[in-house]
Image (cartoon, rainbow, N blue to C red; front, top):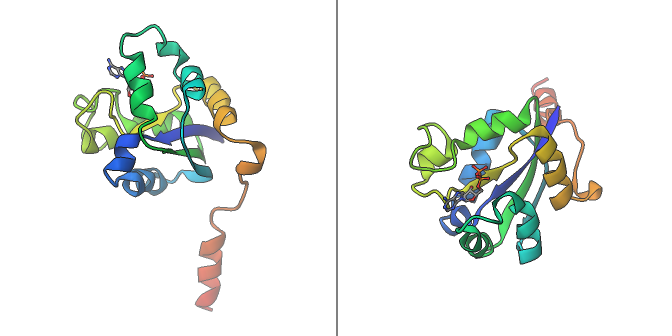
Length: 153
Ligand code: ADP
């Protein structure tokens, strides 16, 4: 099992697509281990996007990512990191394949709806950056299905 960090970005929040984006991950079969709304500040953004700090568009990323709160998710599943990257599609939404979140819902490179950790190592660091141990939940995802099954007896 792997855990990965997803951020539902300000463009998805502003467009009323947070539930749609979350639903794509849920429908795929990923389990929500943690979820919260958070207002990103400059210090957190500098850490999170440190690999882009020398890019000319870095200030606009920080401005964009703090325009509204974001929805932070820790998702869990077999090979969850790569599965979530595949679901998101490539960075530039206009190039992203139909069937991916960015390919279906986005037209922008920057406002591309969603962040997903890009490797298992990055995911571990990013989950720890956004969630405390108390905010991550271990539970049996199929418990409700057993309850429904007992209804029918
Ligand atoms: P990804 O989010 O697909 O892993 P990166 O880590 O390379 O991509 O970039 C982080 C985020 O920075 C992107 O999701 C996008 O919002 C923004 N970004 C990347 N490249 C550009 C660019 N050339 N112009 C504007 N924003 C960009």
